[in-house]
Amino acid sequence: METEFTPWMSLAGGVLIGVSATLMMAMNGRIAGMTGIMTGIIPPVSSDWPWRIAFLAGAVIAPVLYLAAGGAIPYSVPVSLPLLALGGLIVGIGVYYGAGCTSGHGVCGMARLSPRSIAATVTFMIFTGLTVYVVRHIAGI
Image (cartoon, rainbow, N blue to C red; front, side, top):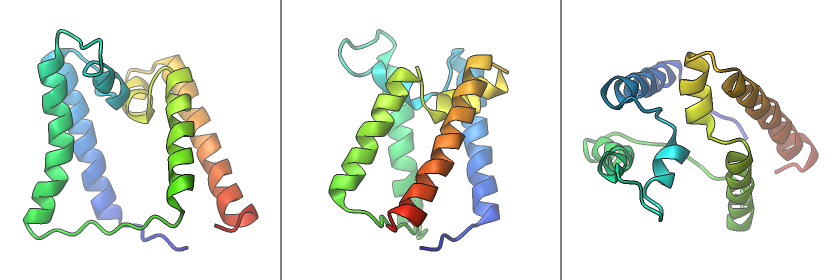
């Protein structure tokens, strides 16, 4: 399977993620980690749930608006639904034991030079590389 690297779209996406994380910290004093944001809307619901819903709604509405404006989001999922579900379960377990997700640790935590976030991000990257190697070269998926 070949992936299409798009440096300008990747740069634009990275800038938007950085700006949103910076605005979240500047305006709310909060870290823009998706796991932390989501846990505040799952019972027991946090008292500051309105901004959490707004943030998540923006994450869903933005791509819909992009598609409505004529944009395209090419994607493919080269694995079966059971493997996709298994991957989601493994990621969920990792997020729980890692005390956060890639956005919280990789974007916000590393920007604050948090040793815990740097260690978590290095771990994410190592296991990402190993997973890609196993899936593509050993399992042949």
